[in-house]
Image (cartoon, rainbow over the protein chains, first blue to last red):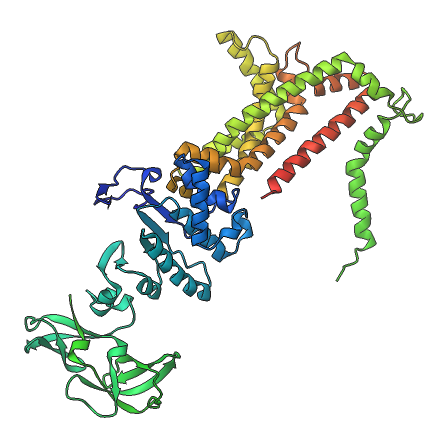
Amino acid sequence: MVAGFETPDAGAIAIDGADMAGIPPYRRPVNIMFQSYALFPHMSVARNVGFGLRQERLTRDAIAARVDAMLDLVQMRGFASRRPGQLSGGERQRVALARALVKEPKLLLLDEPLTALDRKLREETRFELKRIHQRVGVTFLMVTHDQEEAMSMASRLAVMNDGRIEQIGTPEHVYENPANRFVAGFLGAINLFEGQVAGSDGGAVLVDTDAGRLVATHAPLGAGSKVAVAVRPEKLRLAPTPSSVNTLTGTMRGVAYRGEASTAEIELANGRLLRVTVANTGGALPAPGTSVFLSFAPDAARVLQS
Amino acid sequence: MTRRLSPFLIAMMVIGFVFLYAPIASVVVYSFNSSRLVTVWAGFSFEWYGALFRNEAIGRAAFISFEVALIAATGALILGTLVAYALARYRRFAGRTLFAAMATAPLVMPEIITGLSLLLLFVALEQATGWPEGRGIVTIAIAHITLGVAFVAVIVEARLSSFNRALEEAALDLGAGPARVFFVITLPLIAPALAAGWLLAFTLSFDDLVIASFTAGPASTTLPMVIFSSVRLGVSPQINALATLILIAVAVLVGGANRLVRVR
């Protein structure tokens, strides 16, 4: 829809204040980097990159200069005369990016640009893309199914569900303050405690849940309204002794070692499973079967309404 | 590991190839026979090739066949490509199945029926509108177009179906208008199929006897018709020489078409 291949049912799309309704793809200041790259197999790399400029009827020299500069940017200078069929996946990806950027669009759409690459190349390319983004200063609009990729690359991030934007903001804001249960569960892991508001206490609300009464920092809410207290696994603390507030009791079930951190699964007395992430700073985790206490600070929890 | 073929399999293969190619080979061999009698070998000679090139009736017929094939192949290419485009790009429209079946029906239609029905059509049309005036090159070419369209449509549609639409979208996105996209992206990428279709339509038209016999007029005898009528009066070694030349030309064209389809 942004590129002009589909027509929106409702609403408007404006780029730099200009309404895009009824403007065909070839007249929009938007370029796409396709998921399949869609390089023209019958043209060399240089001709692929120069294709968009040739449509603008620039002089041959101007086109050559901009193509060269763009190939430099994506470090593909030495490949100008090759055919796409002679390139590896990562190289094609660079050419596709160069081809989409050479027209200096106001907006660059990236349709899952990294999914076709293997994991190591993907992580390298992430930094590469960010570097290029900063160099060219074009707005990038990137679609991805990889939450980590979205968080590490975006300056603003929108979580979409069923064609609707659930929340939009900086990655940090959306992660720390998810607007609803979908966003909280989609972006990273979350522990949810469903319950009812029991009352407010100076900048915090008290919520009665199946795990007992929990305290979370939040503006006052009406007593009795149904809410969920959400706590990220890395904000739960594992302790041998109970603390003063928000303490839960459970039994260690299992530990997944992930290198920089471990995720432990803890079963509460009522059978509910919680996830706790513990940074790997040396000490061993309690063995499975051991009773443990869990706690979290009131300001580490979020209250989700609806 | 190499698997040894059993003598039985090799024998079957030899018999098969002999069955297919011995008659053709004998035509080629006897075209170099210096004897007037087709069945008696009297030494090697290019005599009949010389006679062939001096034979005006055959020269005229060859020229007519060439002209007809050229018109028919080009016409079939244009119409067949349009058919293929409609079938490949518009996956759902009312009557699509009927359209596809009708477009490809000439592939399986007996030629004698195609020829007869076209003859009746041309006669009726002439009586009603005065066109076509008698039968000739134009009517043969039209008849051959109906046959060639089906072949071109099948070949080009296969190519278009495997065509990555994202390439066209990418070109649109980069600022090329729809017409430019067709000529700069779509056409070069399906060109091998177009060339293959054209060559196939050309050879089909060039060696067709049945449909041409129905739709030809007195002044438009095609090469296969000349061959057929002269053979009825007894096979002249000239015809062997001609058949050899046609054989070479067709082999080159079909081989070329095959290569084009396989490349890329």
